[in-house]
Image 1 (cartoon, helix red, strand yellow):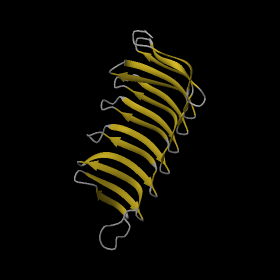
Image 2 (cartoon, rainbow, N blue to C red; image 1 turned 90 degrees about the vertical axis):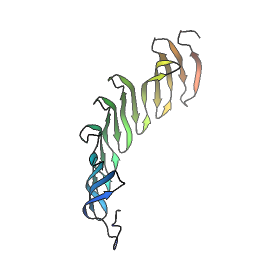
Image 3 (tube, one colour; image 1 turned 30 degrees about the vertical axis):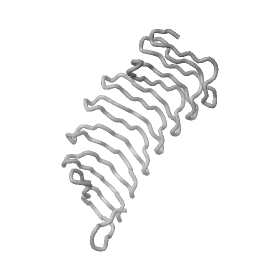
Image 4 (spheres, rainbow, N blue to C red; image 1 turned 180 degrees about the vertical axis):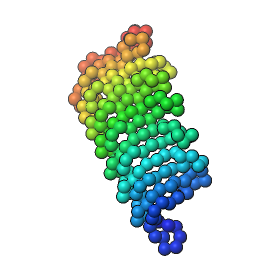
Length: 196
């Protein structure tokens, strides 16, 4: 609940301007001290973020802008204070950086991240906030170069086939996890040249 700092410290009402610090301020609508309506954040007098509240809880679209106050760098939707639906972020060149689905504040659905050139970096899945199903992730390492990790999850537990493969196609690591998320059976680890 927001109150006036002076006088009888009554609850904020209507459109108010809140000073955050020397470079940032907020213009927002209030009803009985609760954010209710628009909420716009400005940095150096340039619009940084727009969101909407309903009775003190995030409700609707949240948009974050770049330094020009016009270029969208992130978008999401919330209802009753929780993320719901698609969440996306963009690189400064406008290329999609991340897209993810939420349900009632939890990751639910796909999570995909991209390199600046648009190539897919991660392709993962979630159910009720936990990893579920096949996950494919591309990593870059100073020691190993690029390699792709493929794994499987059941309700957040690593299970089944697991592999890491170098960019040249040679296996880096390969094996299996049991239903409790512990390594089982024979595991193989190789160098980039294919030697064991």
